[in-house]
Length: 591
Ligand code: GLU
Image 1 (cartoon, helix red, strand yellow):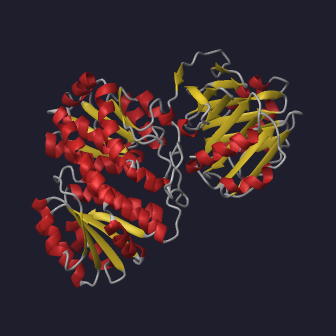
Image 2 (cartoon, rainbow, N blue to C red):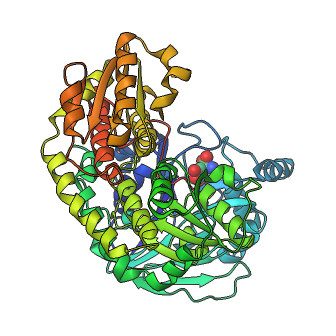
């Protein structure tokens, strides 16, 4: 949440470079945007506006200078408006911040009582005022002294009129330093780095970094020099744009098949399968944890572990797990799922469980992220850059990784074969998805949409509901079909749509009962099924999408894609921006 970027260029226009970076980072927050440039005369010029990055465009005319910082905000403290937009400035300093300063009230009171005048409502403004107060001629010393007073999480980009470069600081919030032909840059995420970057260093918590157009020097919080390894960046890790697709969400749904293939391949190439097998086979209990879509992937995967492998598996929302008295032993295996690897709730939860003796595996789309530093083992999801705020291909990639991990209790090569054989099903679904538009029309015309299923279909229904509400803003709920008559039926009327998933033939009869019960109350019904007989039987009473045939256990890999398409098409029909849903942002780095 919140994207920060900074560039120190050998030559050229840093404001333009930062502006392009903010466009790439906008998925991390779009409440406001801003940038500061140190011009060639050493003056700091700041342009900031509420709303989208594009609002900055008009203010950039005539600004020159090779060093700049920028910010795209997801507000935590203070309304999204021009004044609260970053950068915040004081004296000769300008600062962008990603994170939360938990002790900002005490610091603000203290600064105000010594005469400091604040202009914004943000927690971030205390940072720049502290640095300015500490400044006695040496930028690095001032920054080190100021950050020692901060509690919370912060990735900072700092500009000073007296220094032709940038100071970066990292504590809990993510930041990378990129090197390339044109200069040196700092950025919240690897995919948003400029394309001239060919290698990166990953600062660690407490690091302070001096960035110039030629180099970056890393120091710890006491200003002792530290070494940080430089790693290459590959083109596939960078955000390649949305090509001819109208939205990233659609493009990313169409990249699902590639994600399945790449995640399978990487599992056998990059994972220490021997150690992972020991972890899995030595576990008497598995806890899968995550937030949002990652948690929902856990709901599906729990079926892989329990139904297929006979291993007891529970799924916990990370923000709850952290404070839960859950029983942990050295035979407890915790699998942390996070697209960005930076999800603060998940990182904190698994850190706490690790301290209590659990073994931790991370399943993430971002190598070298915070979660990978906590986990004993990492299983990469190879979805590539995912720009749409709503997760699509990364959800399927998480399912693939979890399926393979569960497969280690038996024949993992067979598990891989099953996954790869699904790719045909996914591509034929995407080649013939006209039903998605028809069901989306019904969603768009409904006051509420309910997603129902039994068994593994229920787990997919929960994610389908989240996807639809995220991008369309229609009220939605996902619940077990058996629960219909225990409450939700009271909400069913002619203005609501119930989407029923039926991919497990052992449970199909009971789901068909739910269809009748809803139709009897005049509710509208759509059915998604991989079972030909079910499709035939229900096609007279509901809008039925017959998706490619597959086993119940593997059906989520196909049915979830169908449901993502429905959510996407609903959002578009209602004129929403599916890539940037209101109030949300990608990579939730605050608790
Ligand atoms: N706390 C800061 C603000 O509200 C930064 C928010 C963030 O990084 O998410 O402006």
